[in-house]
Image (cartoon, rainbow, N blue to C red; front, side):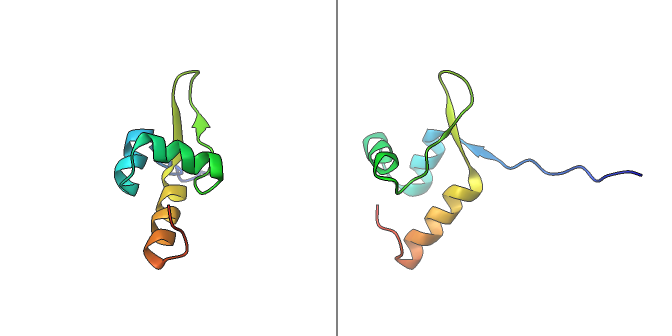
Length: 69
């Protein structure tokens, strides 16, 4: 029995998230603190990331007017 390889979800670094959302670092961390953006996943002691799907969902919510940053 063989199994098909599963695609790994792309992880976005803070710079990628800020570029996609059109915000600066201070606003990013303000939105995390207020719960509008989910907490990032820690990769190492010095780096964090977000699953691309969670950021794309935020972008869609902004486009539809369900979320305001």
